[in-house]
Length: 141
Image (cartoon, rainbow, N blue to C red; front, top):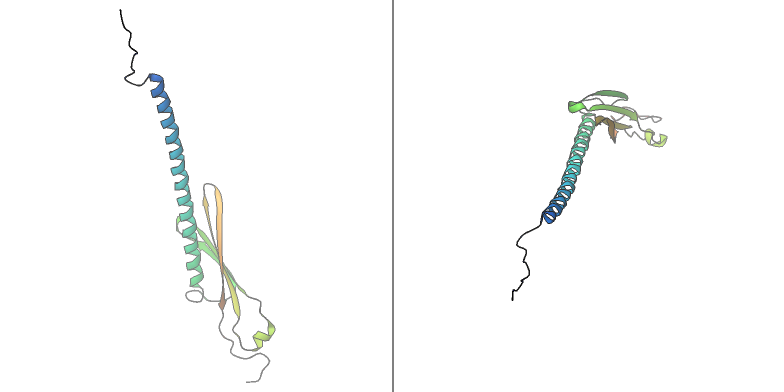
């Protein structure tokens, strides 16, 4: 009598290897997409951080290296950034002006740049005290 023993598989079939390879490729594609999205976010964040730093520096110049007087100015910065600054009198109560309060100015700085064909812009504003008036309006000295 001949006995037949069940055959024991000692390895993987070609179909099992191909399925495992396809799953590995899909997982790799997902991980690659996650890293690409993350790197785009880092670049966008760097652009905004740089623009905010330029705007803060632009505002800091007013009253120190640039006079605090009404007007507009603009210029170019490194890496394709441009700036524009506007200084305007800030509306105040007439009663406060008569009490020898220095005038207020609103200073606004815009920073613009372009990435991937899209224009980007941020703006920062600040209120600054102007020089104190020499005479009091409506009052004898």
